[in-house]
Image 1: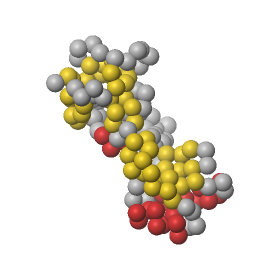
Image 2 (image 1 turned 90 degrees about the horizontal axis):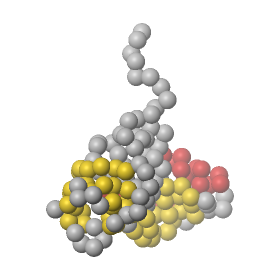
Image 3 (image 1 turned 45 degrees about the horizontal axis):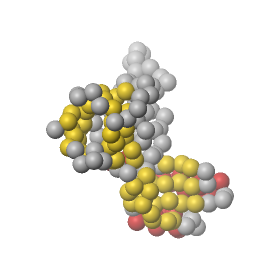
Image 4 (image 1 turned 180 degrees about the vertical axis):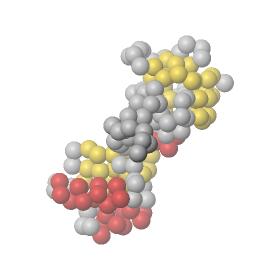
Length: 156
């Protein structure tokens, strides 16, 4: 089995592609298959989320491009920014991973959340699409280090 344990920072031409849903791209250790069917084991530093377009280095020297797979998501469209902001507020209050686009919001499909947003007067469409949620204010950088913008010192 091919092992992948390094993330590349510099652009390179990819030799193969790894198509993954968000849940799997959020894990640091997993087994998967390249688009061609070859088995791979991914072992990365904890706290890293893989994004579509990320490049990984396999133990045999091949460069593997990560791609976001289509998955079941709920997408809310609205021409009213206030309605989308309100929806984002309520989803954020529930710590829902959220992708934000021009005039729309997307999250992993959940009928309870769909019902809540429909109750707010929004139309929810369940579809198959890639899911690339916001990294968040406290996301880890490419090296796995967190940048919070504050100190963890406990001086009193």
